Length: 159
Image (cartoon, rainbow, N blue to C red; front, side, top):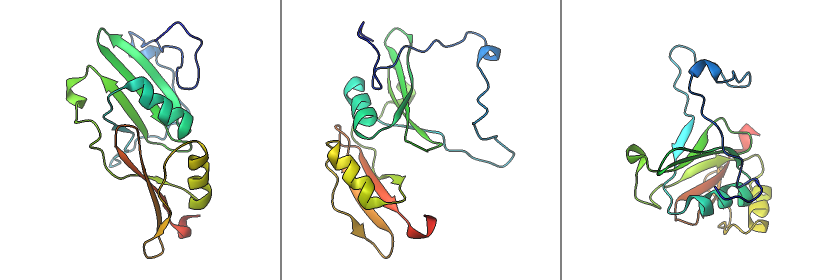
């Protein structure tokens, strides 16, 4: 983290409490009931965390939830798409999360109006392919700066 003023893509460092009882309860978080498997975090392999964080926050509108450096050579950034219960993480220095950069494929972002969502992203500088109708489900694909691919998806019956 530099000494510049924090922005959406560069939040203030988050302190990690030493004691788990110091972590505040989030009343908006869904409960985890028996039998549930909640997908909450997807690691995204990138070469430059700052560049990727700027893309996801500034171009896609993801919220920067966490940007911490809990140890020398370790950094964890967590971002959440608007309205999503699942976040992505950009990391360095965590061997268990190492993946070849640009190999993540086809993560779906479900939208209520694909033309409007595509237009918004194009206006923000994202190279989004034209919308395709694949049997009543609509898709528009794009990639992050490292080549990880994403898909806007619209299912009209979910609107």
